Length: 416
Ligand code: NDP
Ligand code: MG
Image (tube, rainbow, N blue to C red; front, top):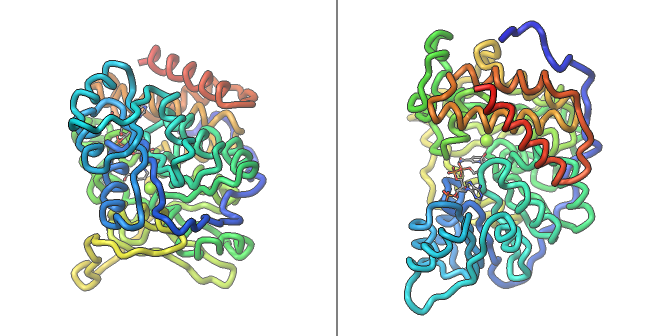
């Protein structure tokens, strides 16, 4: 892969029309909030349920969705007794039903239509969107179309369909609250609904842990195995985002996510490596002030802020011991050794369909890497090849987005 021939060519910043977080109003009903947790069996889903369990007077779990891990989903269902569940297919639905306690017979839905039904159900107030990857798009859109409060962890849906989600939310009044720690940090630092003060913001600074290869020499990074890539130094996360963190694609996706949420151009979103993962991101204002959010590297903090918003509820996460920590350090990302960050910026600048190509090629390449069929640096090479082969196309709706997603995946798999 050559790093000098940038393809697609750089072009001026394309700023989204405006961001999402402009007029936040989460309805207070006076009764417990009814949660649907999509991706309940994953890292974020489990953390969300821990938050809900800590405040049983505030939250009722109305619906839970997993895909393949029916054992864990059955345990969660037995504990929270939601009225509706969803899994990937018929066989898993039957396996799940067999694991449920006697006398408890929830409605069990199947596949993308089932996830979307749970997300849009009248009995749900808040949807935790925590399915991994492009599979999260349809349920996220269903939640937004139904005007829900959406605690959004599935950053891929903003990368794939930022405009569609924004326009749908405008129409339905859906409120999108960012779970991703960096965007949640900015949301907290700028005071939640304070984001309308964006004219005061000179730049957003997203912090990155740097992943497991932050200090490794280039030749060692090139030979990285899946086990090495999955060993994240500070965060415990699912396998796909852990590999994204090792390649810095996670930060690339987050730059796109930040632009989509704030409406700011990519030139105003910087990335700084902060290995301790205590400062979760910063906003620099026009008087030179830096507003930051600090906290332990535990996703329950961000999740709880979204679930309770605008209330801030007590939480039993570990406290940061500043004296023990003693130092917070910051450094520039090594973009030559981690080309995915630059690829994401280029995709965002190139047009609406390029981020779809970026994300699909990345998801396919990460899966191939985890299967041992692609070397670590092959992930960036696969993405670059996909972007170079893409001339841009109109994506009027979710079906068109998913069609492009499928074509890019097929091409990436054929290339391996
Ligand atoms: P995990 O891999 O831990 O969990 C993924 C979840 O999605 C599981 O519940 C899994 O079900 C489900 N799932 C997988 N494939 C499908 C599918 N085709 N259809 C429906 N459900 C599916 O991922 P994470 O929890 O780490 O991440 C979830 C999302 O949150 C990602 O978008 C990630 O980028 C984002 N995020 C995660 C953070 C973290 O700290 N983990 C931080 C910030 C954002 P099952 O296991 O039953 O098969
Ligand atoms: Mg993040």
